[in-house]
Length: 263
Image (cartoon, rainbow, N blue to C red):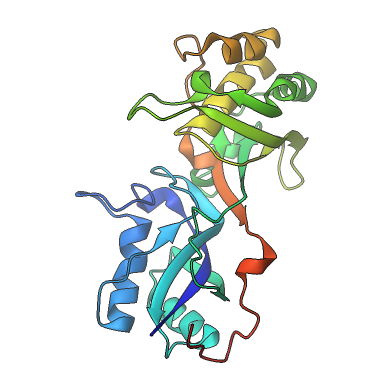
């Protein structure tokens, strides 16, 4: 008998080559699965709501795992945090209904991109966690550049080309730039039903060029219509990108968290 849980993870991405297990390099998936194997005595596959790249951080990555039914929510939460490396932490653990999958069951995902516009953004205490641009940006130009991407579009122009996909359409519900509260700079909050490889970083790179006066606002609509990324700005660096959360229907959550179930 087994039970499926959702762990909400925080991790600093600087020491990882990404979420997904790879032949070389340290990955978040391998770190989580190492702990699960130690706890359960057998290999347990961990599925994430998104596949972050090298250097990308998370403050709300949903990760599903199916483990022996003897585990309760509280016990698994304590055990994960006792064994995970210091740059990875489980903020919460939830018992889920059978069939739940962190990626397939997600209705929406949200990212945040953080940019520092002051010279102090290059401090070693900030640079690993934001784009240390250290140059002023036109916030209203950034907001104008974000407007056309809201809604359903083909985002081929803002996707790294790799393995062909059935389609490149995404429905972006929110794309909002705001001034930072902690330091001089700006943040982009973006939520969509799905994201393509490098999509947020390529969007940010293009919009920052608009905010610096290097590109016209109209370029965003032109790129969306082009269907290719040959004229898209280089992607923003990974240090400023955070996976914030994944949204799941309430029906997936099993409310009797501490009672082992036979489902």
